[in-house]
Image 1: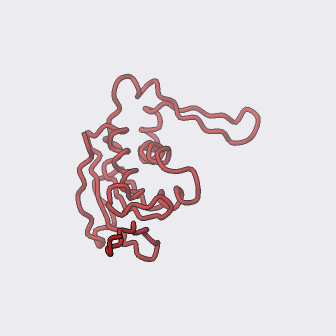
Image 2: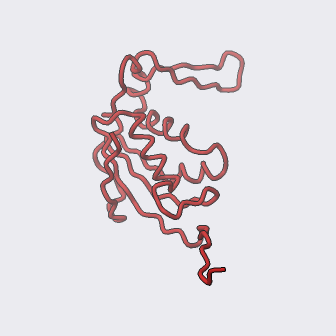
Image 3: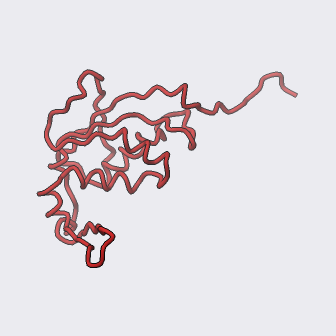
Length: 149
């Protein structure tokens, strides 16, 4: 038997060092940009990815109000929410939601790409979305990240 041991290193939450990335959403396609964001939040871009550990990085999205949707999605895509009361179902098209809360469109897309459990909710807290071009996280010195096209 070989004297070298080839054990897979499993990441621990104590060993994780979260980096900061900033993405400019101006002119980017919503779904393609959000897959990149979800990958970075999960940590799948790192060589030491461990599924049960929140090893991802923090992501700042600026210019969320200038994100693009292809085809007729602006008028046909619907966001449905339900208050829990009879007759409490509300619908809004992507265009209506972009006018009212452009941040919600990006957050909704990314949330749908993360795990639906406590770990996914912890990962989602590392996402910071802003409709304008400025953000208050300059002290973290975020690195510019270009979404995959």
